Length: 499
Image 1 (cartoon, rainbow, N blue to C red):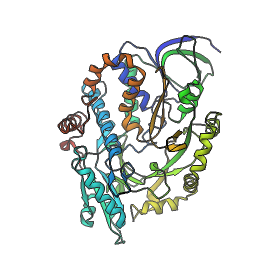
Image 2 (cartoon, helix red, strand yellow):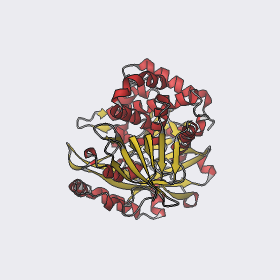
Image 3 (spheres, rainbow, N blue to C red):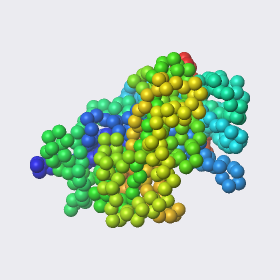
């Protein structure tokens, strides 16, 4: 064991999209700070950020029906959709700044223009979608959204889905052309390449085993080299725990009071990927349906065109599942190990509340390939088993905590937990995660560096012109951002790839 101690200004744990984003922001704001990154795996973006482990929708709430809820009086609440869309616009502005400043190149390697559609079947769902369309199309953020319940129009939009349909059940879709497909794995790797060029010390195959407060208020990390087993100690004034499902155990080890009474509920997933290029060529969109009753929001079925390694592919899913691991490369004891005296009642309450969800997840695990094909055929009536393979997606760990809604409430979303003095912060939760990484990290900067914020604001505004401004109240700014980010990221209509 080596007792070598290394001091640095900032330590980032986990080489995913969140650490990549925070590191890049901090390097722009304070170039002379020393940053060290520890990643257990051999390369960046291998877990939740990886392109095969998430849907890459560029969540802008254009097509995800679970972000727009029908209220008791029948009206549609679109406030969550507005929030997520505004956050995604912030991400796009930051990426545009990086491209324009030549800090990253070739945006088409990580972002492509792609229509986003919502698709529903059945009288009630068609009524819901129409009401949702009316509520959203009035809003400048969702300009250009179209609605149709005409089978001929749907055939034009989604031929692969409409071909061979025998049912005369009413169907409807909304479509918006300004959607995107984002390869967050590629973006994460680009950002880490950029950080490396800025002398950020990135240590792969290094696992953070423990984390504790030193007497001077800094944080001391016990870091193990995965290959050699040697242990080093590293201290920093600020630590960010951005290890996806691995964040909760480290947050618990830090001992900060804000990390108590929080649990995690792991959900795994599978996608089906099409290996027949003729089928792939017939679809050019992300099409989101409605979640089945009892299903968690992240298992909304969707049929996605994806651009992976600059090649067009087609994925369907996700099929939810259950595994006690907190990471794809995690341990079967992750879930049980995360139960502590301070969160045991929270966890038990969540277990009691979520019996139907657990049952649903176990049923999903038991599905055969043919049963999964049957679900796919609700989207593609002519789907053939031999054209599709199964891919295991990433693990997601949903936050469980005590809220006004009661003890052990399961939270679907992304959450930052930080110490009162801002010296340590962790990111927990899942979707819409990656898409909103920039605004989540700006929020973290605001909470953890309040003294520096005023001095940093001009630079933040240079990177993100809409920073601190409500886009909804400034429709002309929305137009401006759409145009400038579209140009910088190659998303303008004239640059759209031929279908």
